[in-house]
Amino acid sequence: MSPQELKQTISAGLLSFPITDFAPNGDFRADTYARRLEWLAPYGATALFAAGGTGEFFSLEPTEYSQIIRTAVQTCQGVVPILAGAGGPTRVAIQYAQEAERLGAKGILLLPHYLSEAHQDGVAAHVEQVCKAVKIGVIVYNRNVCRLQAHHLEKLAATCPNLIGYKDGLGEIELMVSIRRRLGDRLSYLGGLPTAEVYAMAYKAMGVPVYSSAVFNFIPKTAVEFYQAVSRNDHATVNRLLDTFFLPYLELRNRKAGYAVSIIKAGAKIAGHDAGPVRAPLTDLTSEEAASLAKLMQVLGPQ
Image 1 (tube, helix red, strand yellow):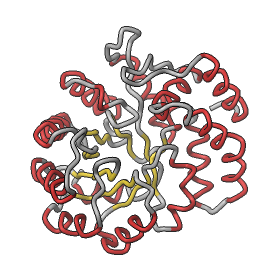
Image 2 (cartoon, helix red, strand yellow):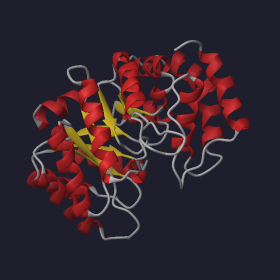
Image 3 (cartoon, one colour):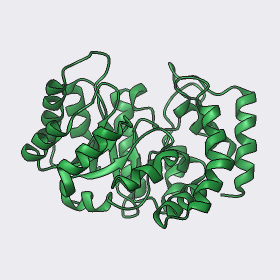
């Protein structure tokens, strides 16, 4: 799949980021991870992102990363394309991106570098170096310390033909509109705020109809139903699901930092697809919080 073919693929439909399976001692479990992908793939996501933020990329070590990407590619071959997370310091991000390419991933989601603050000119140079280190498509994730402006992306698009996508995790409307208007159809645009469903209608109005769904990990039927309702401007269904599930869900998710990942693993366990605990420094939901989530999920019915 060429970068331009990948760009077309991710320009429509629902995207998702599978959680990563860990044993009780924290070790990666390839067997249950493969079964998870086999369960999720038929629901119709356009692409799956292995070892992304929801997949706890930030807690993985290199050997595990290779195992995860290899398992995802082999399991989903011919069913749904796999993109891989990559991030951290520039040379490390390049190593991850090249390893994902070697293992057969169709593209890279370039996560932000970590800890140190940097001028955005330097962040743009970081993105350019990663793009030029691989031939597969790259999607840049504007979030946290990566806050590229429209002029940065315009220059990157001119020098990096395989930069095919922009994922917004900042939620700054003025910036999103300026990027969308300035770059036009050069990039594919993805909504990437945590619990993207809450922002889906607003982002669609800005020309960003595609988003990544974390809840697809445990309520895939509802995630697809919601996406389809957004696509056809079915406000009644959107509002019903916001009121009965997503807004109460946000109250649980917002109780602690890091729960955007933890609550997904809790939901998967409740749904009968346990992925094990999150890794430190994240913390799992309390039993009381998990019980509250289970009640919310019961309202949605079988998945």
